Amino acid sequence: MTPSDQEENEAGILREQVFRELDALGAKQATIVFDGSGDEGQIETIDALSESGSEVDLDQPCRLPQRTFGLGHVTWDSVARAYVYADGDRPMTVRELLDEWAYSILQEVRPGWEIDEGSSGQIAIHVSQGVANCELEARYTASEDHDYEV
Image (cartoon, rainbow, N blue to C red; front, side):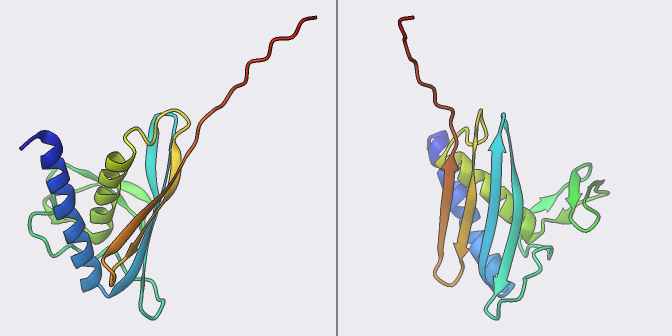
């Protein structure tokens, strides 16, 4: 198995886990918004809605024992809106799982999505349909050369 085959297989497994976790939380759809430029890229927001249209709490732990954060990791606390130091292993949250999956998708569909002028967009997940779409707007700088006799 080549490294790209292995990455593709891991991305497929991660995708299945994302859909299972969202379904278990009662999410009908989820949206991941991203933006990157100047060699830096980030996930801006991750939101999910239930069938009734209410917001789904994505800060619930994953039900996947292999998805944990280990001792010594710094993590983002969305309530405190700050990075915090984790004291020990803890389950990865569904939000963190979606974050990890989003970065793997972006690397797969547009390697270097965050470089130079970068790109922005969103990943729309339709849980009941088993479909996810990545809408990406790539930015670039154009120039035109003109030669004038003066």
